[in-house]
Length: 123
Length: 368
Figure 1 (cartoon, rainbow over the protein chains, first blue to last red):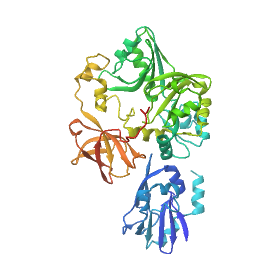
Figure 2: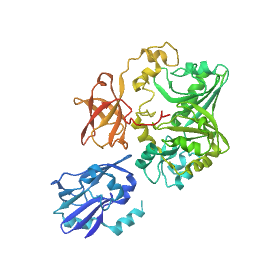
Figure 3: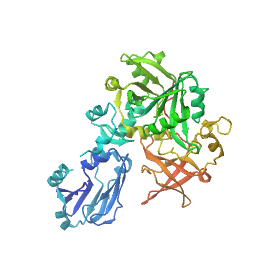
Figure 4: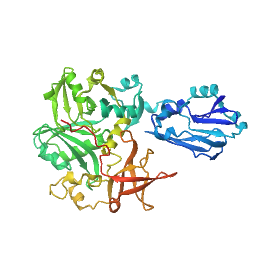
C-alpha cells in the first residue's frame, strides 16, 4: 500500500489495481469546516484530472480532481449526512471514493508523501 | 515591498486574534479574524447555545450634539428621530436623493439634543460626509470611530456574564435600549442590540482599553471568541441585511422589506429621499430561500422561475443551525409571490422554497 498526492491536494492510496481517493489535511484545513461533499457516481469511468466531486466549506468550494484513471466502485455515503468527517479525518475516514482498474502507469506522475510535504513547505 | 496586509487597517485587537490562532482576512479594508481555531461552525453553535465575543472595533461611531439636532437628524434619515425616546436605539437608514440606501445604521438617543450613531465600517466616510452636509453648521457632528472600541457579546448566557463581571442586573438595558455602566473601572455605553438573533449586548468604550476589555471578558469560562465567518452565518439565519449585499445605493429599504417599518404609505413625514421613495414603484423584492440540501448558493447565483431568470442571490450559506443551505435574493417584484424558485449553480440546478425570514426561529434576542 502506498500513498501518493497531487499538487492540487488530493491523495490516492494505491493497493494493487485499486485506489482510495480523498483530499489532504492541508486542503481540509485551508477550506475550513466542510459543509457539503458532492460525490462521484458509482460505476463512472474517470480519466486522470477529471473533476470527480466538490468539497464545500462555509466560505469556499473546491473541485476534487482525480489523481488516477479508473472506474468508481465505491463512494463514501457517510459524507452525505456528515461532511464534517472530511474536516476531522481528511486522510482516513473522510475518503471520497474508491477506484478500480486504475492505470498503474500514471503513478509515476504523482508525488510521494515525502515530495508532497516538501511541496507544502514552499507554499 | 508592501504586503497586502500592511495596507489594511487594524483594530487594537489584531495581535490578540493572531495569538489566539485566528485566520485573518481583509474585510472592508480591515484585517479581521474570519474564524479562530475551533472554526466557523463551532463558533456559530457556541453563540446560539452559550456566549461569544466579537471584535467589532472596525465599525464607525458618530456623535451629534447641539440645539436642533433632533429635527435635523429626523429630516436626514428615513425613520423618525424626533419621537425616539432617550435611552432607546432605533434601526434607521440614510438614503440618497433617489431613495436608494447609502447605509443602514443604529441611532442611540443620548438626550434631547445628543445622539450616538453607529454605522458600517465600509460606509463611514460617505455617511459622515452626507450627514455633515445635511445637518449643517449649527450642530456638531464628530467622528469618534478612531477612539471608540466596540465589542459584541452575544448568546443566551451573555447577561449572566455581564453580571459576573460586576454589572448589576438592574443596570442591564432592555431590548433595543442602552445604559451607561461601569465595567473594569471605565464608563461603557451598553446596548441590548446585536446581529445574531440571540440575547446579546454591544459595548462601546475608549479604544485605548480594547485589549484589557477583550481579555477581561474572555477570562470568563463561558465566553469564546467568534469571527466574521460566524457573524455572517448567524445574521443570515436571521435574514438580517448586510450592506453591500441586500442594501446598496441602487436599492431602497422598501425593496429590502422595510416598507412597513418606514411607514411610507401611512405617514407624510418629509426626509432626504422621501419624495423619490414615495414616487418609486419597487422593481424588485427581497425574498428568503431555503434550499434543498446542504449545498450553498453564493452571491450572484441566478434565480429562475419556470426556466427564466427573475433575480439573483445577494447572500447565501450553509446554515449550521438548520442543517440546510439558505439564501437571500432579489427577484422581480411580480415574481416575488412565487412559492418556489430554482437556483442555477451551473453544474446543477437546485430547488428552493420562498419563506419569510427569519429562517432560524429559536433566537433568544427578545427573551426577558
